[in-house]
Image (cartoon, rainbow, N blue to C red; front, side, top):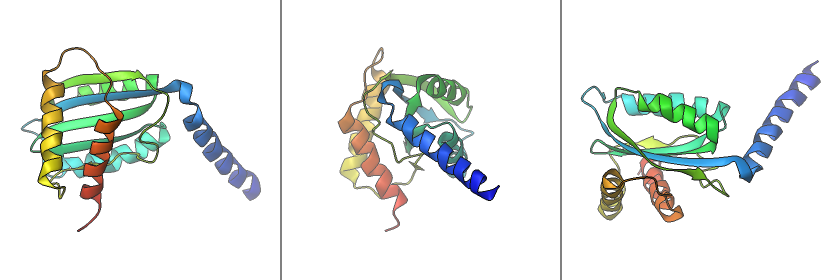
Length: 167
């Protein structure tokens, strides 16, 4: 019986990986928002902890960056799952001005190893944070949806790495 249970776990894991390899159903969504007055000092780490587990179960990958109350999140996964999660996120009172800035089918997952990385109080160089704030301002002011670029996602990944690696 243990062998069958172990096999079942490995099969589920293999199926999850095969689903990630199915590039035809990968959807990427990005949004910007601002932290509300009820956003507490422990909220970001709680969001990161809870979301990482739930996102892994739903095969959603992504990252969230917050700096000086400015929030930018990118989510990737099956379209219905991502849109359902975004609807839930949009209703969270801990942030305001939630604006979807990107949402489209994509050929590749840029965040395949990121269940959710979040952070505030960056140790990233000031020049990277200036780029983040310029990107947030541009996306907040824009109208309609545009695809978030690979370069923009890479910038967010670099910032996230500074936040998750102790210096």
